[in-house]
Length: 160
Length: 375
Image (tube, rainbow over all chains, first blue to last red; front, side, top):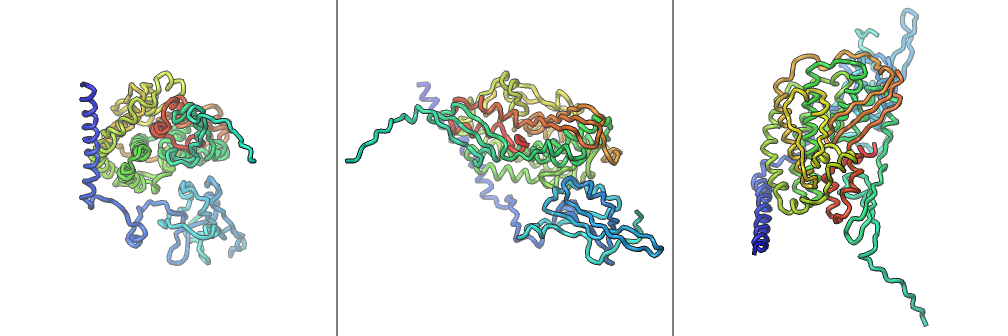
């Protein structure tokens, strides 16, 4: 007799617990304003990332196509996995001396782990985080970027 | 006339046979291969085969400088990335005898606990999904998103942060950090009731988990099962209590201990830990002292020659970092004692004699992360 009572009590408790769970799903079904889905590809125009978002490493240039990179190579040694490659060039100064400047600052986005050590290490604040995050390309070679723009030069007030 | 070949008839139900669970199986949560020995549908024994996602992180550490090692530890147990970072940072700070500012300790403790909640939320999602309740997955991820937004606002990334450096933090917290964390705690205290309604109180789930997958306290200690899985068996192993780091010695929190050591107890441990983590955050969030977000460190960190060990409580158990330094800027040897590897070793013992469907529930309750097992 007792076991029969337990049997039906079990069924009753199970149904009750299922209904408690159904209540939660039912509540969300009838209150669609609580749903938090982001319609990503459609909201591209209004989508704004946080200011500190780590999308990619960029080198900010000012209006006169000038950057702050001296080509010292500290970011290259700070990088844990060889993402950054610095190619230097020598130019003749007016006083006859030769000076090393940056020729190309190559950034392999495909190898980057977004640890931020290059940006932290840079003594002249030449690097920054960019907000771009849609990095999918058809060819892997397109992920190798040159950060300093063609024809750009260094801002005058930077001292090495 | 055709000759009839009489093959010996075998009784399939009595014979022991092996099946591969994984490497591609939704309930192993990664590339883990379990060779399960079955008789009928009773598990006789089980052999985990690791190494499908081995990346040689310990060897890679030997060529990296100490600040560079941090970003590799993210990729071990990616669901508790901040806590892994914390272990290496504490090791370097201990070896160099650097005193980090109070502000850093407070922030690190809060972030660690937030990360623990986020990790347990994802565990709850996947455990519900293993048990057949796909609805859980969406509710858990919805709430985890709030924590990830807080991380993204302050540190710029959602999963792999690398935001701790030896001596402090990579960058200071966002001005809105305290406001957002308080709003999250208020929100999540309400939403965690949904979790209980949906899954904890569900009788079908309770019947499948209660009394299944028993692990005694002695076995938990001898297999080295730590974290919520070990505490469910009554093994008091919380590093935050026994070897406090950060500001855990200043906050008031309970070490939750279970008694039975079955799958349901392991489930309840994590649910209760989320409440405890919220209590820790509430005690600290208003008292973050002002100050620097990083101690003054040298440009090149060279640890004095010797051996160092540091442990922290990751969300799945005790994470230990062992380092031999020969005085150079890179370590001579780095070894990680990952919690998941030890927890996995007990799976064979726990699951002997259970049904194959219960193996999925036991695996879910142990909450293993495969990249942490293989490293």
